[in-house]
Image (cartoon, rainbow, N blue to C red; front, side, top):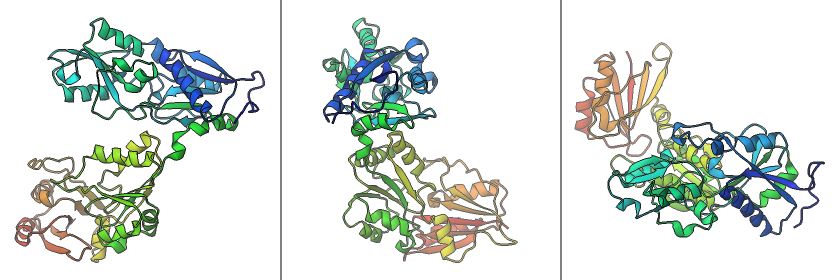
Length: 460
């Protein structure tokens, strides 16, 4: 495919591609052109070099959260002023919010998303007090988790300048992107590949252009890895009864290539996803199948592989789950995420039993609370913060019932306040206990209620 007839600015017969002036940035432009050439796409071009604020200022620490466009400002302005037609960046340097008027034309496939250590020995083997250079807060945290005895050194500059710090003995090692070393032909410098997940988009290149420049955008679209990505749909499965899932949720399951489901999901719902791979990621107190970070990474990998992924969650995906964390994580990798609301147990269980959460003359407000609040430790008995509302619904609170009762009393709720604990609501095994703040703990112990359980408190 030859695209020399593509429309270009009247004063130029070449596509003007901008980048920073470092050796790595120059190689990255060549990589983008090589990817296009491999698809038989060629065009005349001019490579224009720029110096960003981050290139000029090598003193400001990146740990101080400098401007979002610290490494892209000059190129953004060059695009907006029509000095260039496209800009090539390390994708991880992109600001969270792309400037108005600009658009990502392409995001290349990952070359290598790992962090590499270049040093005198492996990072874990460095002695106490050894100096390790990095400019990233994320890397600093990961380094100290792997070897808490090293001393961190805040370093800035090009890859070559960072490696020289090791050669000159200023640092005993530095942590850099493995992809950067590979692109510069410095792979032999790698002492080890580090075990943690690196920053989002590491190892990928981004091509930015102006919104509305359709002809220029079409040039780069064929190397946009996002075109082959699947989507992730967070689906609310409802409170337990499989009949309470939404029609839209069923459609998502039927279209799924892969379903990640938890222990609150009724097994009958998986029958809608007959052709899909099913992965159990059950989370319940004291028995997590996967860490949240690992689950998020698996969702990403399936989507990047082109799979339509359903994350099937009990209740509603955005009420006291990790739905917000998963959305943020996936979108940081430019993976499309859709949300299918579900019937929350906070609403579905009381309503199914005919218990009004609001009623004229009795309750005009309702609050939903996690039974744990910010408390995650089994033996942490700090009282929960109780909001002002007529009706309170506590989810996942059975093991913290005594803490909840104490918190309510300290917040001024009367000892005779009605309390109901509903175990396994909407399931055939549903069971409940009714009492007051004074009696509910003893009643629950006697009945030996099982999780999951909902606690309903109605003020007098």
